[in-house]
Image (cartoon, rainbow, N blue to C red; front, side, top):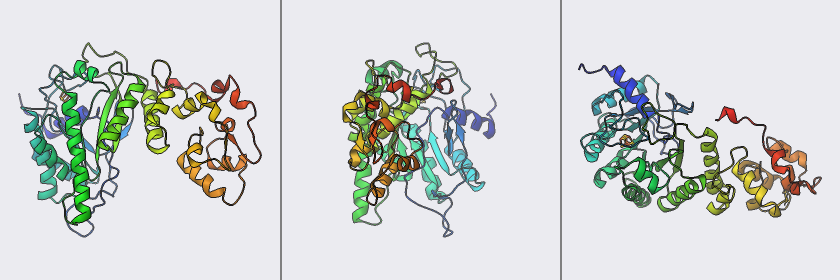
Length: 412
Ligand code: SF4
């Protein structure tokens, strides 16, 4: 069979990469080539947008080295039993594509993943060669995110961190049982072991750089992971718990949630329908509550129903507040930052603005209106100089009054 052209292979391998949501070019070291040395920048524009099937916009040249794979993960379009068109790039071809797209200002960097060919270590070597060549042979200073393969030789995974801004290893599924059922070739201990080693290497490299200015960087944008939501029967409470353990143990930069989307030629063990996209959104909101709003995992889990699922029609902070009405109303003029962050409708910026403003004046409801999108949501939960919710907080129909009009079809 004739070898497909670069364009045909790019079509296949960029399409095959779109299911991975764990790429974002934030948080890395600032580098540029304005001094005439090298090429690229982690700060500049020039982004190609890849669109996931659900419409999310994802930047970077996001491509697989190959979609051949010796593994058979049921949820993956590239699994060995899948009947898709296969293609493969050489490392040099990916390097050339990246440089040419970068020069044309199409992209800001590269997100490289791969199916597994021959062996995990062989595949990892090829991916590292792409990153090495971009950095060493071409002085590429743009962003590189390498998806690493947990089954590869640990020494190779460590090399990946020396060339890439960010590395990631997908934990894939929220529970070990789900992984064993849907990804029989993968092992959750091996995955977490590899994530742990990368985490240690990131900490060591940061520490070394505080003592030696020229110590090598190691994945300066940290590591991330992705969990597929809705492919197995894990509930939101389990997912939140798993994500939090990962943050705590391995200091991950991000846990991405990817609502399972049915793939072409899907395995019969997968659900036929994808979960509502709103479920993924609620998980991200719960993630933020823990990372930026001071909620504990248990508190966020309390926002879920008896089946462990977060409500889809209201956000988890509002769900939590409705179950803890005894903690409200919060006096906006005297309440602690911690309690203000728990008020539905108040974001971190609004809370900081309140703390600044109340040093000079007693705040009224109108003042809150200028700091938030709408006071309707927060009125039952606050007191101000001119407002007390009286019995509003105890109303049985409060949830109904605060839930937005049904627009679930938009996210279904
Ligand atoms: S190892 Fe990766 S590419 Fe291969 S089937 Fe599993 S998820 Fe897909």
